[in-house]
Length: 243
Image (tube, rainbow, N blue to C red; front, side, top):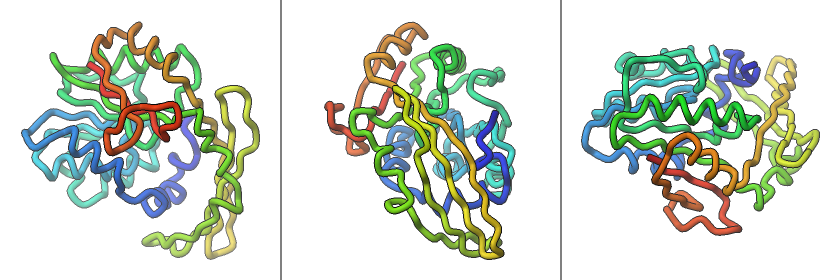
């Protein structure tokens, strides 16, 4: 089931204000390079990165299973030059083959089971062109970032076009092994309050390496942050470039 934060159009419209382009965006644009490539942005969300890829001359497909996100992506200025597909990663079926497939925004963490991870990696590898690369990131579980997901640490107010001010905070509700459940609290100017539950998996690097190998990825580069520093035990990210 798609997370309500992304499927509901009003909630999805808050996403860009909470997650503006940053160092991760620069990283993925740099990986794509300047020469025109065929790119799949899997889990494209509101389409910010997909449209920027296209603006730079790449041939881009954006795919996401969340209807709210896809509605925003399609309406984004420049979105008319991107091919949009409403699909999850394991179910994606297209004849196109891509030089580069990216999964950004820690979307990899929504794949909760080994089976879901295996199906996703296998299907995306099938969609790679010869010498193509799959690039994505997941939070390093050793850093225990979820411990900062409290109302006190995350409360913020953002201004959303067409919606107005929105108060947002996060609250972790349970941690069981690699699985973190949390709630996103939205407060709208009209007094409406919405709470959406979510769950993420914080997979270990060695488990991820095994899953990549089983899916047929023979070459893997590992980074620990957006400056391409090496992946260390205390790095905030586990960033993968696999082919």
